Length: 140
Image 1 (cartoon, one colour):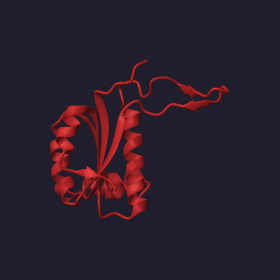
Image 2 (image 1 turned 180 degrees about the vertical axis):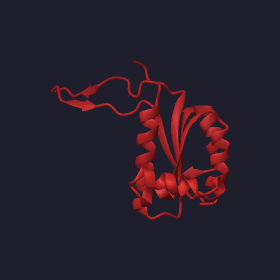
Image 3 (image 1 turned 60 degrees about the vertical axis):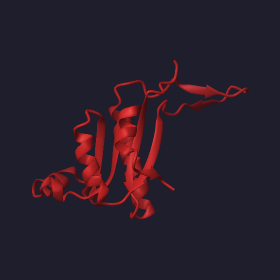
């Protein structure tokens, strides 16, 4: 199978988070979007060495992590929602509790504009995703 260079995943993460929260955000966003992909994740099962050792293949799509200021995520989420692309907003409550029923109760008592985003993941058409995220810089 040929690689598809027309789609990509971008994860935009706040630049003020401790490293463990950045890693947790990127991990959960990647897992969510990878699980939601309607397209084939990889281009095959394995890469094989000369001595016949199998190495599982990774995603066929580019995955990029970008950084942003905390207040920029509220604007980005509104734009992403209207884009028609697959996305997830990773919020503070997702890192502070492991109980989805607790998150449901917390969010039911908040307005959308009061949600604190740690990161946003987007997957889809490379040009559309790039247009939405062009103002952010690579995570360093």
